[in-house]
Every structure is written in C-alpha cells, then in structure tokens.
Length: 260
Length: 325
Figure 1 (tube, helix red, strand yellow):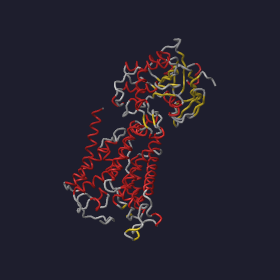
Figure 2 (tube, one colour):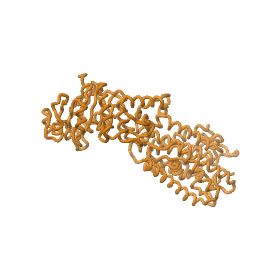
Figure 3 (cartoon, one colour):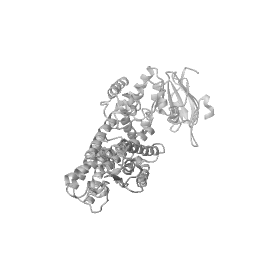
Figure 4 (cartoon, chains in turn yellow, orange):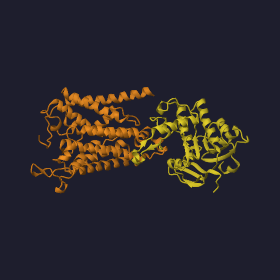
C-alpha cells in the first residue's frame, strides 16, 4: 500500500435507483495536499463527499483511507477514523450554544460510569472552545448565545472551527463560503491556510474560482457524475477559463476521454 | 369510606372523566372545599409525573399520546400483584390471581409496572425511530392498544384492596413528593448529562445530531422508554392513591400532560423548553383547576376555559419565537 496517499478511491460509484449520480471515480489525495473539487450543480461533487464520509453507502468501489480499505457504516465511523467534514447544510443544532455544538456527539464528560447519564464537563468544553476560536481567529461575541441568534457567517465559522479544532487526518469542506460575506469568507479562508501550514490535507468543494486558485494545489473537475479533469494548478499551467471549459464540457482531460 | 369505586353520575362540578379517579376519592360533595383543592394538586402531581416524560419526548420533536391509557393499563397490571389476601378476615372479593399473587412485597408490583411501561415505550420508540412512523400515529395506535389491555386484563373488572405497602406509595401528599423529586432528578439529567444534551440536539436538528455521531435511533427509543416508564409509575401512584385500579382511569391524562409541557414553554417543534417549565406548567394547570373548583365553576366551563388557556399558551409561545427571529 502506498503510504504517500491519505485518500484513494477506486471505481467509486453511487446510483440512486436509475440515476447514476457518481460513476467510477478514481481519486487520490496526497499527504498535506489541498485539492478542490469543482463542477456544475448535480455533477456529483456532494455525492462523492457523501460516499467518502459514510453519510451514504456506495453502490460499488473501494475507498482507501490512511493506508487501509475502509467501509464506513456512518459519519460517526468516518469521524472516528479521522475524517472531519463541514457539510453544505450546516450540521449545527440551532437551540444549542457554541461549546455544545463544537462538542456535539463527542462531549467531554466526567463520571463516565453513569453511561448515557454521564455528566457534561461544561468547564473543560468552554475552555477548549475559547482555545479553538482563538486558534482559528474566529470572533464570536458571546459563545453562550444559541446558534439561532447568530448570522450565517458566524454559524459557518462555528462549523469550521469545530472541524479545525480537532486534529483530523483529512478535512472535507462542502462549499464553506457559499453564503458568506466578504469578511466572513476571509476568516474561513484563513482557517484553510492554517490547515495548509499545519500540513493537514483538505478536500474543498467550491464554486468560487478565485478562492480555489488562491488556496489549493490541484483541481479535480466532476461532470455528469464522472471525473473529467485533474489539473495541477501550482505551476500556473491553467487559467480559470480552462477550468470553466472542463466544467461545461468544452474540454475533457486527456486521461478521461471516455467520459466525454 | 368504601374503597370500591362506583362511578356515580350525580357528582358535582368536575366531571369524572377529567379526574379518572373514582368520584368518592376526589370530587364528592361530602368533603370540604380546601381538601378538594389539595386533592386536585395531588392529582396534578400525578399527571405532572407523566408530563416530565412527555416533555422529553416533545423536546425531541415527538409526541406521546399513549400515556393516559398506559396509566390505566399499568394500574391494572401492577395492582393485580399488589393485592392483599384477606379483607376484614374474608378473602379479597376482587382478587384477580390465586393466593400466590397475594401480599407480595411492594417492590414486585412496582417492578412489574415499570417493566410493562418500559416494554410499551420500547415499542413506541422502535416504531418511531426505526420504522419511521410519525410519533402521532404510532402513539395513537398505542393509545388504543393500552386502553384495550386495561380492559382485557381483568375483563373490565376493577382491581381493589391493595396491600398496606402498596397503598403507601400514593398516600396523602406522596404524589406531590414523587412529582417534585422526579422533577429535580430529570431537571438535572436534562441540564447536566449527555442524555439531556443529545435529547435537545435531536429536537433542534436531527440531521445535525446524526452527522455529529449521535446514535439518534437508540436515543429516541430510550426517550420513549423513559417517558413510558414515568407514565407507568404515575399509574402505580394513581391506583395506590385511589386504592383501586380501573380500566377507565387516566382518561385525558395524556392531553393534560402535553398541556402542562406546552404551558410551561416546551416547544412542540422540539429543541426548546425545560423541566422547570413543565413543573410551572403543572402548577398553573393545578391552580386553574382548583381555582375553578373553589369558585364552583361548572365542570363543563372548566374544560372550555382550560382549552382556551392551552391555545393561548401556544399562541403566546409562537409570538415570542417570532419576535426572537
């Protein structure tokens, strides 16, 4: 097994009944690499992410994560083995506050012998929340406000701070800045740059060409459920127009001719 | 006073079906008015025990309609293991089982009753969480099933003459003691434990809860089980207090329990509210009912007024939420 790769998929396929949402995706992600996934609406980007993170069960294909074949039965397992995901629909509980959401599903507890009735360690969670927000540069006036009282940007920052504050082997962000203002987008991009500095690999699903060219090493383009291009953008070989051509189907990557 | 209840039609204001308690024990004309008010508080406490459970269900954005009939079914089942063998030296005329089930230690009827509740709750939870049947429908079905069980258990006959130990469970102010102690326990659980946090999270955003790694199905089943066990315990307390178990007991209890939770600020859309709110809701409903009884407002007006109050509480809650948003 090649240790160089964090994530590798072979022939990853997902059909919803007769709809081929994802067909034969071969994808690789190296250690420390930041890759963007682009494509039109319905091209299979989110479907691809959902298969990797175990939110859905794939129709066929192999996923190799961290050197091992994996078969996540759910997002819990994926997270436990080190894949952190910020979903397109924010996975936050509106009536809970920031620490509650940051630690949702993995609360710090004491008196664990009480089983499901074990006590929450509010103090430790509050402290870790403050640390995480400071580390990611996210500013939230009062962390004990419930999420429903926050702006879209603040919510997104909480969701991303949650992802970034746990040391994960792979971070996946599904359109993290789609609904954000300029400043908030900048905050999110800063978090992404920090992940890059820390050498944590990232898959970024995005429509924002400027952002993608600013942030990532490589762009993988999806079209009609299939990967149609794999573009290394570090050397400036490609422009935004090239990428658009791949997305719309005007061009197809050499090794993906069969998908055209 | 005769322990065996005879439903009588010529009682005063509060109609029998609000109470479910045999007429003599709560609403007959021959007891003083303050005593009657205290009785209503004791009864509010019994419904309050149900409300503690139904609050948790509503916080997960569910509903439990089966608790009233479950009270009756559990009362019947539990008390049939809590009967005394000899009444004034004669064999118990209402004995359901043979002598083997007579004069058992009180722990047996309690365990039997709570197990029955847990069983019913597990079925509710399984249908709702695993088979994805809407909570309203699943518990409505269970509503009928439990009423059926209550009637079937002793072929419709009342079960009476419990042991002294059994009588002690719901004696005097004991329902209030049980209600308040359970309220404190569940307040702490909802506020300070993982169970409570996940209950709120599921009601707030079930998808988010699932993606965060919470085992939503298992948790929901647990919530419905706890709610049903609380209703079952209310059944034990009610039958103990009334010294009899009857298949018609607990009528409308599920609705009053839901009303207590809603008046106490628990949002029917889930994720919001607290046990303290439910306790306040129980007190408000108790005060209203005893107040109405005290001023001798006719039972029919009582029902209409309470209905109006419940609707107003929901309107107020929605208005408050809109203002916040």
